[in-house]
Length: 388
Image 1 (cartoon, rainbow, N blue to C red):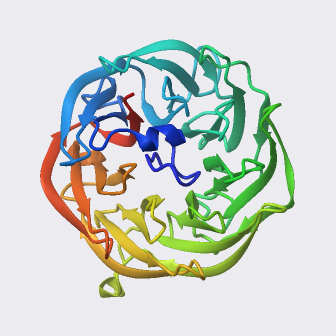
Image 2: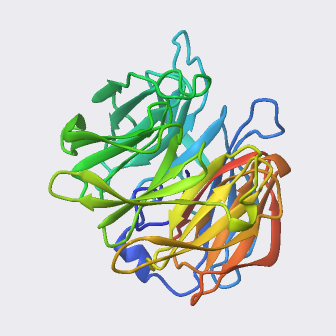
């Protein structure tokens, strides 16, 4: 999940508090990560976003890069990090993570340096709350890694690397570990990693000063066998974590205990409407985000369904109630992002090569298309950057 919310670790743009006090309707930059292999894409694309109307204006290619699928923006807004979702980097069987500086005027990205992620197929990247560390999930390699961030935004050699092991019930997709997401807890003391191949959310004690990971106690939480956990979103109050399961197309609600980082299951709910109770097709949930106001949760469905499901959140229990599904007006919504003000949702339709803007009803959380649709080649991640 590449997201642009700022309230949860499922969100990959961590804007500073000062950025939230910026002038009303001051434009944002939006960066879109893409797949370049066998597509028309050249790398990362930039847009200007009008928070008053939700309109996106294309600014062209921000940086040429190979398969820069998932993005994360530094808390200071000066640097952007992208995983290069490849199997080989140089002579190594590894993907890469790239560090860029952001020109706030032109939206151009300048490569600072790259680092091998020490596992192939990195699919997600995030920053810890201090901005001192970049965390990467290697899907193909089934591992996670941490890279300290230097003062100039460049990446230092990895300070932590953990190889996951094991398997689960689906012998085709869960024959081994497949780390799909890693991010830090609201207080930055723990790192949680969703591993699709293990049906587990692994819990690590995280030291931001040293960039290290150590097994938590307990070391993991389980989801249903064969569910395939993909991404995680925290509630703004820090009390609940929501785990999106790709293969089950479901969301599991966990109570989060900040003292030891543990997760206790409260509810598992389908991300598909009851109107689809007889649906037998593929289930490929992709992205999850909690609205910054904490009242709503959204999850995207691929596999030919091509919708975003909207849930209401019980303010006391954290549990979910599916309200509706909304067509994304495109094919394969691999990612979406809610703007920092919580007024608009941008859906990235990978296979129809577009980004569609929806207005969010502040009372009900319902989505309605604004009519704004922009072209984007194979879009798979959206990140907002506040322009100071």
